[in-house]
Amino acid sequence: MKRILYLLMLLPMLAVAQQQNYTIKGKLTSKAEFVMASLVYTDPDYVRKDVKIVNGEFEFKGKVEDPIKASITIDRKVGTRTKSEICWIFITPGTMVMESEYDSLSKAKITGSKLNVEYQQLQKALKPFEMKKKEADAKYYALSEAQRNSEKVQAEREKAREALEAEMGEVYFQFYQQHPDSYLSIEALNKYLGKIFDYKVAYPLFDKLSARVKATNDGKAMAEQLANLKKTDIGAVAPNFTQFDVSGKPVQLYDYKGKYVLVDFWASWCGPCRAENPNVLKAYQNYHDKGLEILGVSLDIEYFRDGWIKAVEMDKLPWKQVSDLKSKNEAARIYGINAIPQNVLIDPNGIIVAKNLTGEELHKGLAKIFDKKSK
Image (tube, rainbow, N blue to C red):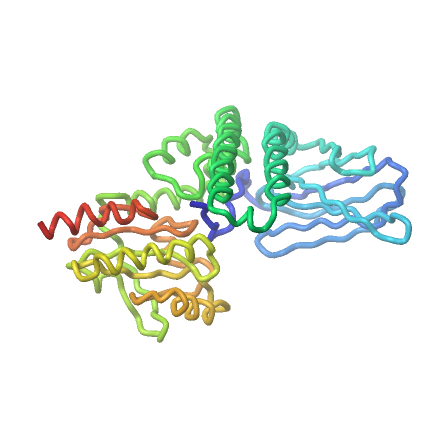
């Protein structure tokens, strides 16, 4: 099932001791009438810089602690209109030059940064698969609405999407293997693993990255996630947490000690979560009388509080729902959750016995426990 990212996608960064200066020089030699260049990135706050393009040249200056993925937007006059085009660049300490002899930035070359050369190489390797995706999307949207909504077409589309993602995953994996000291390798590793991965699979791969990459901000973030996944792996004692229900009353996980409890991480804005809710509800109806409890943990934020409460009502979820309504849900952090839907099944002794049971697998997993008990 398609997953929704809860947290920002992990972008790898190189470790440096402090902020260092960067310069980006633009040289556009086509005859287009260029007007303005804009640089946008987050570090950690939103940053936007606008400069005029004079004789095809522009320049940005600033400071960064770690390399950052940024966008450069070029505005040019086309008759009476203004046309904008975007180009991605990784800002690194030092001087980078972006050059283009064409009206389009698709062929722009970036020099002065090994990281950007690696990025362009990776994008070139991924391009055939991006083209496949565009072609598949074009064929899909050429169908009538009725055809697009048919179960057969949806199933075929999902199967093709998964196959394409697997092929792209191999490209990312090859890049990771060939560049253990690259800033991009954490992103490549995450793309290969997917947003939901097993500690035992992920840690040996992460451990092969260079010490320099591991010491970056994103390296540290992945290390923390892996540490939390290890603490909440199958067979581990489930860590306690306390959050508030829809009425504002505190609820802690350990209130459920002595019972089987499925901790269900979801959010009102998460399409796959909402699609899975009827399946979870069916499991609850089948096994609640046999001893199953469910604790819903919403990754909604304060702004979406009303939407969260409405979603609980619309999806007719009878079990307790909690959240801290923060941008980084603490319970999700403790359990190494960075994508939803996910769940954790905990036995009466507080031991994690299963993770991420969805669809038919949820019913099979619960049947092994409760149907066996009833015999």
